[in-house]
Amino acid sequence: MAGATVTAMTAGGPQERPSPDGPERFDPDHWRVAAHIEWQKQGTWLVMWGAYTRRYWAFARWPVPEGGAVVSAADPDTLYGEMRDVERRHGFLRWRYGRGRGSGTGR
Image 1 (cartoon, rainbow, N blue to C red):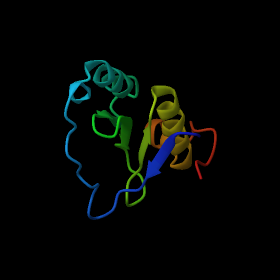
Image 2 (image 1 turned 180 degrees about the vertical axis):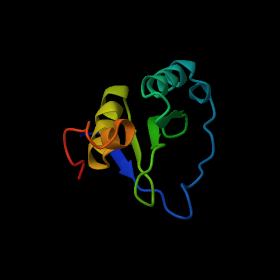
Image 3 (image 1 turned 180 degrees about the horizontal axis):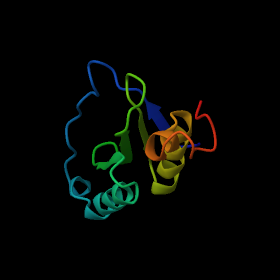
Image 4 (image 1 turned 90 degrees about the horizontal axis):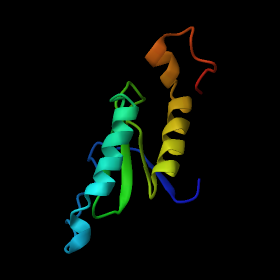
């Protein structure tokens, strides 16, 4: 998907960046959207708005292969699409509902 980034976490973790100066530092609308997405996903993803990167970030919170699964996107619709793609690739439905309920192998 255009405008999306998929990142694998490494042992060193993500690089920290300084917070921006100015009005974009406080962005409650984007934070509310991120909180709503996390609520809709029932806590299986940690979702946040990056004030410096100006992107939504989602971290998978269910068992995924070593390295984890992290996606980011500039808008909520693209983020949802990337999250669904990761869920399919890593067998989220099988993990969430049990082996007999997923429609595919997830791999």
